[in-house]
Length: 205
Image 1 (cartoon, rainbow, N blue to C red):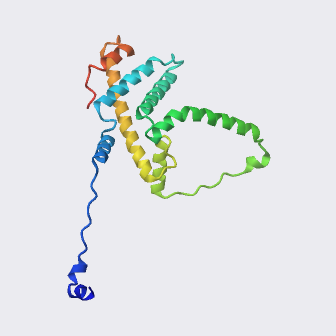
Image 2: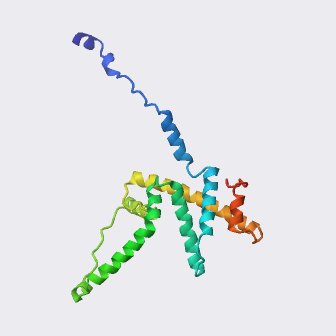
Image 3: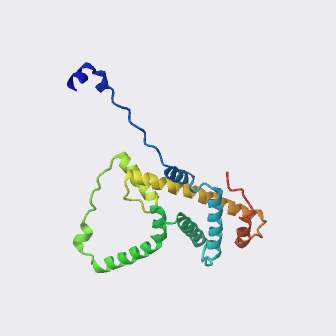
């Protein structure tokens, strides 16, 4: 065996080529579904229909600013429901209102339990360390995507990609609904526009 290997040095110098890992059909379907998520006309129509139903059940706003805020919250809530809890940002939106209320209650309890003294007022805030530029950008991006402040970069990029695609669909759907309402000369209601969604197919840009 040793003599044969010495006699033929080229036999050991060329290792066998690595075999490429084949992608299974079910994995190909999953990859295709992730690439086309939020981009199909059917998903846009379903979202628009659910959004119209949610807007019809909103309470009359007290002011113009409250009206805009309630519409935005309803649109985000319907968008998160459409994600079916598959992503971190959608779960964060669905639980965001409850978390906000709990945080407000906790702040009130902390302020009541912690008395202000003279020494505490004179304390200077701690100096924050400067982060590298890349880490600063990652932190900013994590703050823009709901529920993704403490994610690693690969997971954050995946969540951000899905969130941006969902927002693009949301903008298209709301633009389409606005065109329906304005195109009817002001006499078209949300309920009537909901009935037109099944027959109109002008979502795609």
